[in-house]
Amino acid sequence: MEPKITIEEKLEARHIVPYIGTGLRALYGNPPYIEYREVEIIGIVHREWETHPTRIWADNMESQHIWLFRPLLHPLDRISEPILEGGINISDLPEVRTNPGSEYGHAKYLIENGKSVSGTEHWFVELLFRHHFDVFGLIDKNLAETIKI
Image (tube, rainbow, N blue to C red; front, side, top):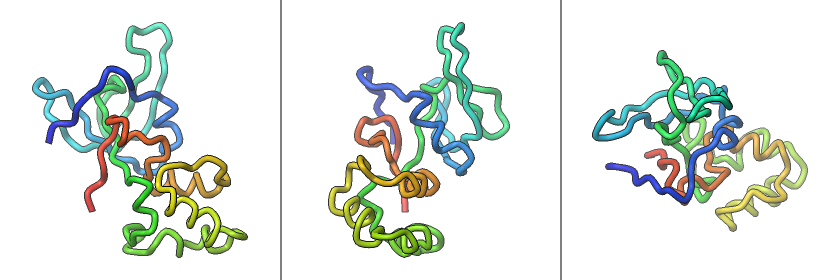
């Protein structure tokens, strides 16, 4: 499966930074020159003076250009599926159940809308980042790959 790269959109530091420290995995490569392989993103750096200023650190490799990475994310419409933490539904996670109104508020809103996190409380958006949900719509923009379950 070869991902398509579009010129209109590009992966940016703001798309990666919230996932740093969460164990986010990505495809790294540039076929046919560099075959895709799965890596864990561990850091990001921006050097304004370079031609391609944003670079990502992954696993045991030197920093590489951001355009060589395709994050592996869950689409938002999977929020109601039992895919996280060994098969626990996200709406059953303690962070969701203990926040007032969340069970029938935020989780239900996101499940029904499936695409937007606008107006959602900060703690819930952090939960989505921690579990590698596509908060920025990168899959639809062809900048990320869907995690296979």
